[in-house]
Length: 111
Image: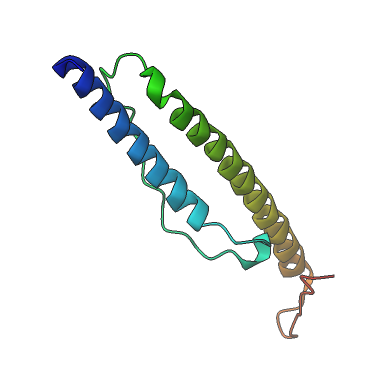
């Protein structure tokens, strides 16, 4: 392998490593099953696409494709968690707007 080809492969491997780490962090911030059990995640790290990588080497195509599929799965789970939070927020706002401050209010979040 030529030095230029090796540099290209190394740069692509580093980019894929970073993306895999970011996807793993996003995935770990999500609840294992029920969106109601989510914890407050740390703010996500921003990813800046590297420049000058050139075309993806053929031998890394399967890895890149698998990573893209995993990203789509995590994005779907993030969207579902976001929708659940918005639903809960709407319920809380309804209760806050309708209760008398001097009386306790209980919210049945499961029923």
